[in-house]
Amino acid sequence: MKKLLILSGEPYHIPFIKKAVEMGYYTITCDYFENNPGHKFAHEYHNVSYMDKERVLELAKELKIDGITCFSADEAMPTVSYVADHLGLPSYPSKSIEIINNKHLFREFLKNNNFHVPKAKSFTSYEEAKYEIDHFNLPVMIKPVDSSGSRGISKINRIEELEEKIEYALNFSKTKRFIIEEYIDKKGYQVGGDGFSVNGELVFRSFTNNHLDASHLNPFIPLGGSWPSILPAHIQNNIHIEIQRLINLLGMETGPYNFDIRLDKNDHVYFIEMGARTGANLIPRITKYATGVDLIEYTIKAALGEDCRDLKMTEPQGFWSCYIINSQKSGIFESIEIDSEFEKNNIVEYALHFKSGDQISAFTGTDKKLGEMVIKYSSKEEMLEKMDNINKYIKVCLNDSLVY
Image 1: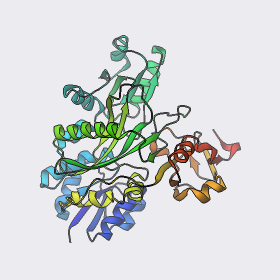
Image 2 (image 1 turned 120 degrees about the vertical axis):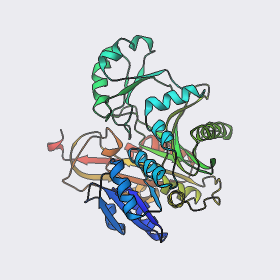
Image 3 (image 1 turned 180 degrees about the vertical axis):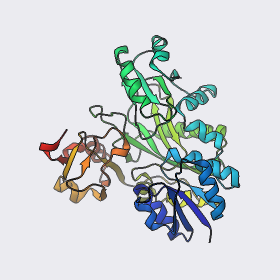
Image 4 (image 1 turned 90 degrees about the vertical axis):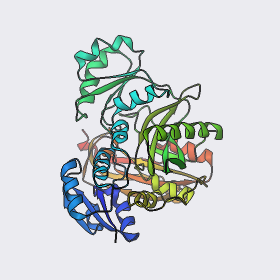
């Protein structure tokens, strides 16, 4: 029986852990949170931080693993590729993971390879940045170079906001470095979704319409994605070509990807992010609902060096979305109210990770989500209307006397 080491037993890893066991692989999890719920579904658990590359490498040697992977966790990917490199296991090149996991390195790589990229530069302090901010056209984005889940990100329209937002970004950076980049005015919805390459060829991709809300505390966190993409076929093909070019330049072979892409008014393709893993927030699950393609299964097979050549491009059928249940206020959770017709006609499944009386945090990053939903619609028009006005159908209720 092949042994697979999965980094993390967090709740969103549970479907992956269960799937690996179902596929007949001896499944091992590791992180330093022994109470993470995913561990109970694995054959074996080890209390080792997945951020500690050397310790995970030692563990992998001791266990004589056949593959290592993580899901929806950018911060674990450097350890995956490091261990795989040392043990000769299937994975992506460590240098490529280093590039796409660091916003400064990624922007430089894109620029040097003639992709469309906003003007950008990284700094370590406000003192450094204030002398160069006049070289940028406002508005600009300020981001930690090494964070994920939209944490620590701000848009500023006035130089007076610079110092405050830099401090905010630095709070989320392990390396204490941030990037300033000119804001990209997007045309239509931001493009999200997952893809998969086999032997360096992007054989499958499923683009989504990412739904953002400018009125939210963090307007750059997608509240969910909807399928299928409403982009014309020729635009989707152009995006596919740019992703393929990026895969080629990075030397990526077999495995999953998650995309965040913007189009400008001229339909130029701008990579916001490209993660070397599947998406979070039920994206793989809804991809399977919509296309029949199980990206969880293929990700596991890729990590163990199994043949993935049967994977083919499949267009989505029907109209679907995922939605991140969230609160724009911190406080004591009381309940979730769902419109009865919406619940009856649209919701396929949902998970809520909190119960009445729990303290919850405002939705400033994806780590602050309360749960997720799989939603189905009868038409494109219904899908877009309901996702763009989701607060009419779903309401998170807090104990008003304890909201802060």
